[in-house]
Structures are given as C-alpha cells and as structure tokens.
Length: 369
Image (cartoon, rainbow, N blue to C red; front, side, top):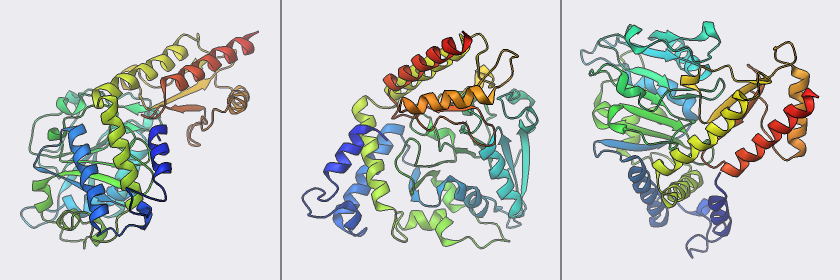
C-alpha cells in the first residue's frame, strides 16, 4: 500500500471530511459514501480511459469468485441452447484454477495453451499456433501469474485474432501497473489486494453488451455473482465493502498525482530491470527460470544455486534469514514452487528494490568466498 495513502487514511480514520464519523461508520446509502464511490469510479475511468460503453462493478469474493461468475454470466447462448465452449490460456497456477472451476461447474473449457508440462516458465507458443474456437463464449487468460512470475507483454491482446469473441482478462496482480486499451476486452477483473487497495473488493470492468447476454440454461446465477443485477443496482444490491472502496479511491488519486499509468509503468519497469539485471549478472548464483519475453514486472521468482548449479535450499534459507534481519520480509517463494519471490507492486519504491539488490550482491559475494 502506498505510504501517502496509509497516512491519509490514518488522518481521516475517526473523522472523514468533518462528518464526525469514520468511513466504516457511514451508511452505504448516504450522500457521503455515494460521493466516495462516484469519485473513485471517475478517477478509475480517468486512469484507464474506460470507454462510455463499459460499466464498473465493485464486487466481492476476490478474483477466484470471478472464475465462477464467468460461467454463470457468459456461457449462455443466443440460441437458448446453453452449450457453449470457452477457450482458456493456462500459463500458471491461477489460470489452472479458472479452468478447474469451469469444469467443476460442468461446462466445456477448451485449453488452447497449457504450459503445465514446462512447469509454467513462460514458454508460451506463438498466437499463430493456437487453435481457438471460432464461436467461443470467450477467451480467458491471466495477465500476470503471481506464483510463477509469468506476465504477458503489454500488447498481447492486440495479437489475438480479431473476432466477436470477447477477451476476458484476470488482471488481479498487475491492474493499474501500465496503460491498458480497455476497448479490446469484454471483461477485465481483479482482486484489489495487489495494486488497487485492500483485500475485500473485487473490481470488474465489463462491456455493456455482455450484461445482456443470456445466461446458461442449466444454471441459476447466484445474486452476488450476477453482473447485470450488480450493474442495475450500482454495485449496491447489498452493502459493498465501503472501506476497501474508499482506500481504493485514495490509491487512484495517488496514481493520478504521480502522473498516471504512463508514469507508474516507467517506474515499474525501472524496478524490474534493476532486479533482473542483478539476477542475470550473478553468473548462475541467482537464476530466474522464466522465459525472458514473459518475465513478470510484478513478481520476480528466482532460485539460489550452489556450486553444482542446482537450487540450494540451505543457501535460500540463509538468504531469507539475512533479509529478515534487514527488515525485508515476504520474500519466500510460493510453497508450490519454492525459492525466492520478490513482489514489486506499484507501492514498492525504487529505493526498496535498490536495497534488495545491494543485499543480493553482498550475499552472493560472501557465499562465494
């Protein structure tokens, strides 16, 4: 979370805008909260240049709930038969889970790309080799896989064949980290807890024509996952996560103050380049397994290798212990892949990355003696 956002939230915690109340105490139907909500949406639209024919939904349940919501809302057929197929691009743990949920609910998920066999190290085939379904309900992909550190290039959506099939993108972990052409997508969604705000709110940006798509005949859509119902009620069918929305709005203002998404993209690239340069210059002591064309700017996984060139868990534990003593925490890789993982979300400063890089060089020098 950006420090200026935390400081402002702290200052306003017990008395927001001279109301004598915390945002947490405001009625979600009050004019005060409605102003918070409308300002947050306006700032988000300004940042992303969201077209008029798109609706912003503030939902709950995290991005994982959207794996189900996609099935409930978008698998219906205009012919009323409900037998559609959706194409899925699997490049890491979260896109795997999206497919698992679609199949668990009983619909047909056509896996066009699956890098599981390569342990999700970013060996993504060229789009020209993909066998997409011409009349698919949608094409789904996860823009940045946090566990494996795989991210698609900025212009990826433009490389997909032009068709009427909507592109669905899970941007949970790189939302607002760079400019995005929203008009290329049917739905963009993401949990807030990486670059948007605190956990508790899920952001969905949907093209309006998809709100009218018939739902699948075999399912009754839960009210809390119904896109059209959420849109009709202005994201307030029930009480929304008001404080999380308020903090998200402060983050949007912070981003605008920095100069918008072009500015934050430049800063994010500078941070990622500095860390990858350190890894690549270590002569095999640090190794990032991800293909260079799909290296994530947000999540940098790497292993620490011994003299035999293989990952050494003892070295990695010493590295983490030393980092902890220097007040660098949450660097341990995901339990499913191990190693080290440095997350460089928007709020991480360049100075913070430089501090990590300096420690990495110090550690490598000491261990090689």
